[in-house]
Image (cartoon, rainbow, N blue to C red; front, side, top):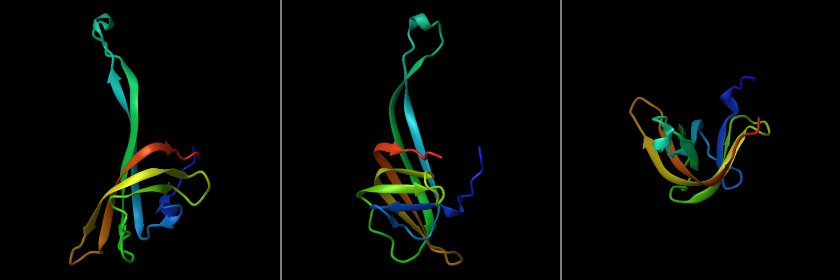
Length: 124
């Protein structure tokens, strides 16, 4: 598998509106493991797949006014690179924004999101 530099990553919403100043993003895609162990299993646990869900966050530096997206559902794209196929997409509910300011640092923001519905996984 080829290595990929994250220098062309990006976060956008509402069919192409890029959130400026973003320096990193994280996406967690998980499935529930539902336990089905019974007496016949002789002490060895067994599971079936339950529901899947996805959520995450992204962070960056202030670059203009932050978009007023918290509390709203949008189509969102999380790009690994600027090449086709290196993108995760789906509908998200933006659940929080966290500004951070210090006298000796750069003003930054962190956003949280919860996926709703299916996630299209990067194909490359």
